[in-house]
Image (cartoon, rainbow, N blue to C red; front, side, top):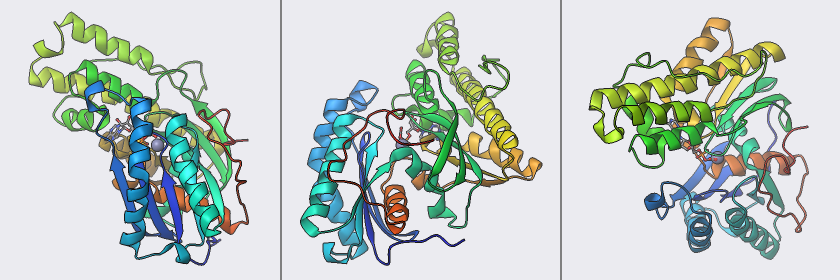
Length: 345
Ligand code: KG4
Ligand code: ZN
């Protein structure tokens, strides 16, 4: 079935964490996608919520203006405004959500609030507009690791979640242990290319038989203990450091891939979607590609630029809902946690 969209451009706004982003889409065609990644968190090895909110407040108007300019679209051309309202850092969400509601109200445009995880899942349509449920999605980012079943777009069931750290968070924390800085995912991905993934047998938390949940905190502790036993990250040779990075990555990738495939088998679907910031990881993409091919499953993954936080996926998720006649009330508020948000049955 063809997807239905509003008959003109939709503006999307994303401010759930530390990226201030705005995009304009017509259908699945991206006219512009502006992402301003905040650099004020670099000295702190992580995102500082108060700094993030202040940076969003400073950046939101220029970022939206640039997205409209690059798209060659005026406010009068828009058919709607979409903004992420859940889950995320509350102060960050409020900036984008407040801006979107105010702009939509002032211009008399329909407004829709979007769930960040639904946007990540739908981001695959920016790369392949033909992807359709039923499918299993692995959503792996800095804040979340979820296995989601979609029987149709907009109807989701969460089959598994992390019980402690998110996959991206495990990459980030391990990178700090290894002295690689923040954010750690891309740094570990790069370094792991030069290392041996079988050098160190780090633990894989499989949890109870049949469980589709994850746990990454034990793995992080195992890396910490190993690095400490060898005299700290500074004492490791470049080769050893690369082996630790590759072995850590292998432990994460193996569990993520195994549980995603188990979910696809359990739910009897033919399509697997990999999305979220961690979907940029080369080893994970490759592992799922090979495993899906072997099992006759179709794997759909967004282009790298739509894996991390962006507003094109928010505009897309919002546009699909607007076309279904959905509107959010002006009273829609920011919701910090996934469990309080309306994602999933
Ligand atoms: O989706 P995202 O941009 O923001 C959240 O919603 O959290 O995901 C960011 C996460 C970070 O933890 C970052 O380290 C991770 O995605 N990441 C990666 C890679 N690129 C980004 N993790 C592993 N390998 C990568 N290449
Ligand atoms: Zn995200």
